[in-house]
Length: 187
Image (tube, rainbow, N blue to C red; front, side, top):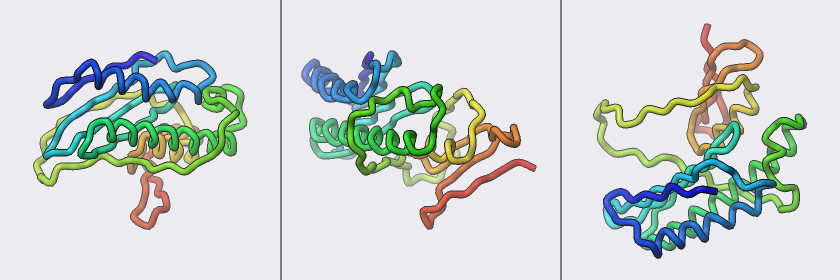
């Protein structure tokens, strides 16, 4: 894996960079072949909290986790633990749900146990202004609703936009307050 480590409102020291690379390299044991994509790591300090955000783009989905602690090294440890739990949880789901040889199933190794995942969500500022601060673009491959829910859980968001493979229309799945899922389809 190639690491893109950057700091927001802080300088990334060589010791921090080495620690991040060492900890994230533990994730390579879960993959058949180490991902060739860049691993994006953002280290930041906000109101006394040391935050780490890691995004790993993989074929067809993203692994993402975020953690805030009073110590940067503790934040790094916890974010790697979250990513490991996500990988184990979603590997189990992939094995259960997807039986196609060209699916994401071939990405992960078969020889590790299941676990639970704590999926992080984005922290939002308390302000109610309507300033656009980020734009994302991504390829929307056709998929069914169950796969869209899995992808939503992988990125750790409360919604996911996808192309429905049945209707060929853009749809949105979202997590309801009661923990169940909803689907929005265009008419």
